[in-house]
Amino acid sequence: MPTTQAMPAPQATPSTYGTPPTHGTPPTPAPPAPAYRSAPGVRVHTSSPTPVSVPLLPPDLDALRAKARHGESVVQRAGRAVRRALASSPAAETAAATETAYAIQQPVTTGRQIAVSSIRGGAGKSTVAALLALTYAHYRADPVLAVEADPALGTLPHRLGATEVRWSGTDLAQIVDPSMLITDLTGYLLPFPGGGWLLPGSQGAIGTRLDLDTYRIVMTSLRRYFATTVVDCETLPAEVARTALVTTQARVLVSPATPEGVVATRAVLDWVGGVHRGILPTTVVVLSHGAPDTALDLRRAAEHLGTGGAAVLPLPYDRHLAAGGAIRTELLGERTLKAAARIAAEVMNRAVSRGRPAAPGQQSTPGGTPPGASAPPAPSVYTGHTPAGSGPGGAYGHPR
Image (cartoon, rainbow, N blue to C red; front, side):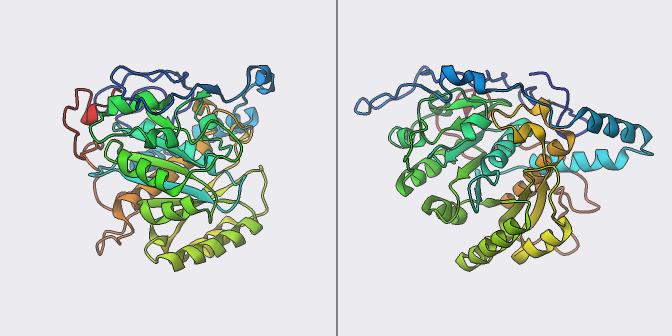
């Protein structure tokens, strides 16, 4: 999918969403979220009924979709172009973008699972989860999965461009088998732009719940197939969200960028720190701006929320995100793209380090590279255990 804007990427390997990164084996571009279809070799238990595809939005309500707007106004884009033209040197900006990209692409030896939750509905949790999934799928050459663990009318499938849902996490928990290859599993998943995969939580039925046993089966079974998994959890303190806090390698807490949101989020952080003191150093708080002008002092908010080592990063207001529906990254504002990359880099840093402090004199920077150190020589490739019989297409026989 051609784009007009791109997330910050290493200068030597520029890429845009929907365009395969230049590192690693070039993936085959994924189609834009078609309906589910059984893939050759998919194992289906004969005792389990095969679900029927259900549209996310009834055909007679398609008229509700307004024309997608760019995240920034024409005036904002023109002003940014002028500022860039007058800038004395773009070297610092280029260096920061490259550092951020390397942090996102850093190697992992086992699957990193990232839980995204919030203190209440409407905070922007699913939006942040979708942005993280799109960012990792864009930058990384290894398999990326987005899991919807908030099945009661969740919006992650909408945000990732799905039009229909069929197989859910509950269905997959009854089917997944240790002998499966990733090519078997992807028959039950939806592709999303950039080469990632989506596992919906339900078919949108009111009252649908995800029980804890199902969540554990899905997460433990899929970890060896996917280098990065982003989990869109229920709001805290739901049972699955609490479990995700202590079983994932990093967690993201989304808060409205309002004084009330900051106060409530600090209370949650205090509670989280009481659950396990090792959680906060691997936590990133995202202050999500749902309106163009919020009366919030970001510096003071960060000081108030940065308890126990948690990082605090803003996600600016974006007209395209605020309108809902599928996220089209070519329509996101430049500030939003940069913020999403910074958040993804910080989360990956903490997922890899597990909250361990850097060695003396090697304090990690937000971009992921210690001051004075050279950037990693090559992007990451998932180096986890390859299931027996895995075919070509990269580690785990990923068909990208």
